[in-house]
Image 1 (cartoon, rainbow, N blue to C red):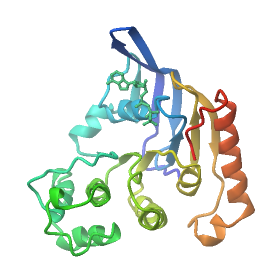
Image 2 (cartoon, rainbow, N blue to C red; image 1 turned 60 degrees about the vertical axis):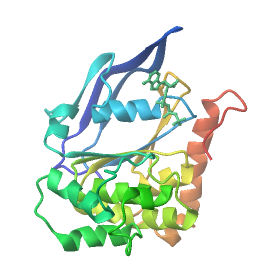
Image 3 (cartoon, protein in one colour; image 1 turned 180 degrees about the horizontal axis):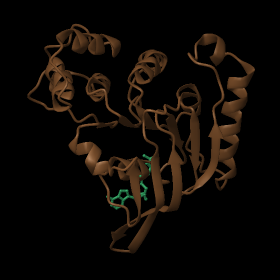
Image 4 (cartoon, rainbow, N blue to C red; image 1 turned 30 degrees about the horizontal axis):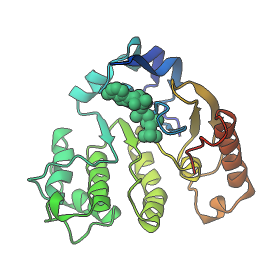
Length: 265
Ligand SMILES: Nc1ncnc2c1ncn2[C@@H]1O[C@H](COP(=O)(O)OP(=O)(O)OP(=O)(O)O)[C@@H](O)[C@H]1O
């Protein structure tokens, strides 16, 4: 839900190419884009189209080949320096020598938030890791590490939250639980969020807006507003409007694809 308190993200003429032995590989075609402050945008598109690259550009982890990115008056680097930007990737990067609770608490302390063991426990419970607070990442499964990384990303109460397939390695039940519970947390913090996902249903459930990207180099093939009430509970998920929106996104994905190359489920 757009939030007037949060600045918009503006991409102006942003493109990205990677140099390789076979020459330049264009990953993101020049694009202009404005994402409303406080909104949740999902990026969907075929495998290799440039979704993660676009997310990494917004995170300041890649430099654009052309153009510029601003969050209000700030650059992504400015936000990172203030620890106001959190990123959760599928291959969860946790500090191996810290426990789950230690990693989550680090998310708070990096953002200079006061110590709060209760808040850390709440997040750990939310992601279903109660009882594992004292374990180190090597003692957890891949899905558990991913959940710990989501809790850590949330712990800093970021202004900008970037999620790259964060639920990819999770079982259906946990994924469903996080899909149900995380939006309320995002809303409470008013974070502007961008989510890369391969799941159309997940995009429709979580996002205010879905950008369907074309095959590489990524262009915006469709820009779909998700006009469904929140919370998106069982009634909303079972509604005709939900199915219709999923159908619209799937059709946009198909339209942008040569036959047989559809990656989204
Ligand atoms: N650091 C890099 N160096 C060279 N090429 C890269 C680099 N990062 C990404 N690419 C290329 O850019 C293109 C887009 O990759 P990207 O990871 O953004 O796609 P994606 O849509 O997120 O894919 P997937 O859905 O499979 O995760 C691919 O062709 C990839 O090989």
